[in-house]
Structure formats: structure tokens, C-alpha cells
Length: 394
Length: 86
Ligand code: FES
Image (cartoon, rainbow over all chains, first blue to last red; front, side):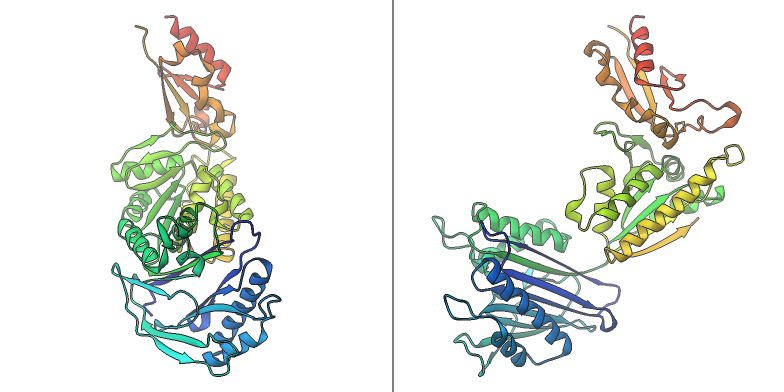
């Protein structure tokens, strides 16, 4: 696998209307040492708690067996024999798809009764050659699994859904047979055509939102979607504080203008320095000012300009609390966090100049605070959100 | 027609912490008639807050270029209303 590339893996599940718990389960595991990724989508029979248990057991077992390198026959057999029986239907049942990507980018897929996995490459879906395998020992009439193999290429997207997605809208006036795979496929194609760099998260969100809207916001079945996107890492640069030596002002400015990714400047004085060196303007924007944090500013070539230390302290505080991007607030700090969580790599450049230090005994403290706040932010990003970070002092 | 009044408020860290966080909302505290005359702008730290040779007390604001120390909504309001009669 091209090591400069990353796999962004995201999933989202929505329970059938009226159910508190979703009967689908999606699990991912990145095995760092092997540079390998295994993902499982399982859909338990029926809905509610019972379905959730089947699906969770199935996905957990499938994941563990796959990681351990067990042949698929054994995995499938073991799963079906272990699942508890449904009291009404006297069957134990959960569909599943297993996806296994190794360090060379070789993808192996095993599919049992789930909608087919989709692979989008250059705007078209791959026509994957599938091998059928009959599992003799399976105590079910549905005893076929399908296997696919292919090599991952840059910008590929892999989409796996449960049948709640492909069958949504079934029986409605304009869609007797539901959305179906064809409907889903053209929706994905249109979405990606419109937004070629759409993240895995957003694509998964869009698919599930669309599913819900087709079912008039009352899902008839649990709907889940898992999207993997093999892409160049998204980078974010956060600059805060003026450089210690004035000569480095231009270095800082060119670090910003040469950076390949999104850019944030946290700091009024810093933004002034950068603007001066880049011949740009900084304008404070009071148009949608909300008390709570100092207002943002606009500067050409920089995605977001804010005040420094108060804003960063707020970011650190909120990162400590939240667990996912969906919990971010509609505020400047929330916006910074969203930009961080949408990136794979976050690079900090922290300037160490103290404004008129010899005159103001309070300011070295500010410098220390800045350093600590950045350390804390980087710590959360690395440990809680598994991001890569780097910090440079200038 | 009455003349425009240019109000700038500092958005720097010091001024913000020292009580300047609400100053950007000054227009909401004025009568509509007077608020219409205001052109409001935010400024980055001007340096005045921590130059000890001539330290001015933050938060700082400027009305038609004239610096107001220790600015508060009340203080700005008074200054603006006074100027609106000119
Ligand atoms: S922060 Fe307002 S003048 Fe420095």
C-alpha cells in the first residue's frame, strides 16, 4: 500500500423507526503492526435487541476469526452454529460482509446475504468478479458465500450497506421495489461527482440521510452504511504566536503559503505579521459575532483566523469532553475542532516571541500557557482521535 | 444628514479578557437612530495595552480615532450619544 495514503473508514447506523437499538453492527479494526484493516458489517435477523445481539456477536466473531486468519468456511459455520435461535422463526441468523485489506492494498471480501459491496473508482463502479462458495456444513438454506478480490487504488471508495438501505421506500407509490442497489449507486455517483473530495464520514451520512428521507423519516428497517476512502492524508496547519526572532516572520509566512492543506491562524498579532509578509489583509469580521470567544477575522489564503490563547484554551477544553465530531458546537472553537477532526494530520507551529517582555512581567506566563495548551490539544488529538500531530517552535 | 461615527473596538486577547467581550455589541445598546450612524470595526491588538511606557488601560476602543481607555458599553454609549448631537 502506498504509505503516503491513508484509509479513512467511517460508519453510521440508524435504527428502524420505533426501535431504540439498531439491529446492524459494524466493526473496524486497524492492526497497526501489520498495516492492515478489517471491517465487518452484520445485519441481525429482525430488529431490536435480539437482532442487535445476533449482529454484534456475528461482527465480533467475524472480526476475530478474520484477524486470526481462519478460512471463511469455518468462520461462517462457527457463527451460524453459535448464534442463539430466534424464538418465533427457530432460526439463528445474521448476514455479514467481511472486508480485509492488507499492507499491499490487497482487498479480500467475503459476503453472506448482504447487499453487494460497491467499489467506486474514477466515478464508475468496479465490476468485480465474484466467486461463489457453497458451505456444506451450514444449517441453513442460505448456504452460499461470495468472495471478491481486488487491489486498492488511490482515491478508491468502498461502500457497504445493510439491506435497510437498498430496500428503503419499498412499497411506496413511486418505488414499488424500493430504492434498490441501482438507486443507491446512482445516488453515490451523483454525490461524488458533485463533491469529488467528499469525506467518508459525509458520504456515509448522506447515504443514511437519503435512506431516511426516502422512507419519509420512518425507517422500515435498520439502515447502516460503512464507507472506506483511500486517499491522500488531509493536513491541517495551526499557527499561533509570533516567531521568536523577527527574521523568522517571513519563514513563518512562507510555511503558511507553501502548506498543502487547510490553514488556521490563532492569534491577532500573528495574523497581522503573516498578513504583512504575504501582502494580504486581515479584517476582523463582526458580522456573526457571538459573545463567548473573540470574533474571527478574514484573510485571503487562510481558512480561519481567530484570536489566540482564549480560543485555543476553549478548543482544548471542548476536545477533552467530546467523543465525536457530531458533538461539536456551532462556535469558533467548534469550527476549529471540526477542521481538526476532519484532518488526518495536524501540524502546529508555535511562535515563542513575547511581546515587549522586558516591559510586561505577565507575558512569559502567557507563553507557557500557549505551550501547554497546544500540548494538551495534541495529546487529545493523538490519543482520543488517533490523529497524527507535530509541533514546531519557531 | 448626520455624520457617520466611526467606532473601533479592540479584539485582542488583553482587551477581551479585561472586559471588552461585549463591546462589539454596542449597536444593540443604542437607539436605532443613532445606531444607523455607527460604522463598527474590530481591530487587532494595537500594542497600546502592553507598552508600559504609555500603557493604556484595556479594554480599548476608538471613536472617530480618539482612544477610549477602560471602555465599557456605558462609556461608549455616552461618548457616542454626545457626538451624535454635534
Ligand atoms: S489587546 Fe487591545 S490593545 Fe492590546
